[in-house]
Image 1 (cartoon, rainbow, N blue to C red):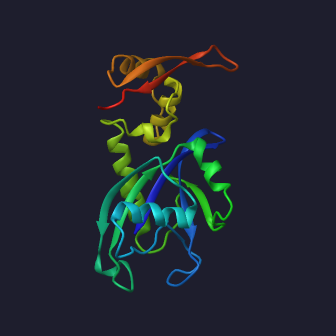
Image 2 (image 1 turned 90 degrees about the vertical axis):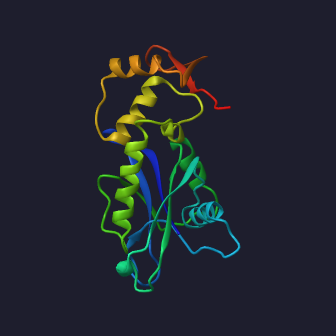
Image 3 (image 1 turned 180 degrees about the horizontal axis):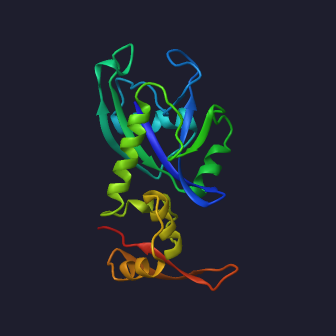
Length: 207
């Protein structure tokens, strides 16, 4: 099993969409970067196995997890391995807290989705497919919630969309679009800081 996990991480140019990779410690592809993953226990269901292998290899527990695809090309691995691949999202405010726990693996590094190095096996293809899926799904669903805290400003939400889509969005048009949506509701709380306090919003809970 393999999992592509996305999160927002701070960079010089602002929030960037990134994913963690694991340096392989055994052959084949010893020393190469690869997606987090592991073997499926015969007694496990798939979702549980995806969560377990991700925690074991990265110490991360995602806020959103979904089965992506099954990759089984004959030449993808010397041992003719079929991979059930998941993709996941993790709130940026939880990454450091989870990684700071005792026992977190040291062979993990975060990479910008636009600067992924050559990976073991067909993992570049898998990462590209997961990114394509995320960029498509963000346009018609509330998937962005998996990268945000429960309450957020419209600016923070726009920055998530910009990071996922890899392009700037007009702030005024974005605000008008969302304020006319029945998916978001304003709260009575505000985010304070250097600028004018910004109202916090949350997604409507689905019954």
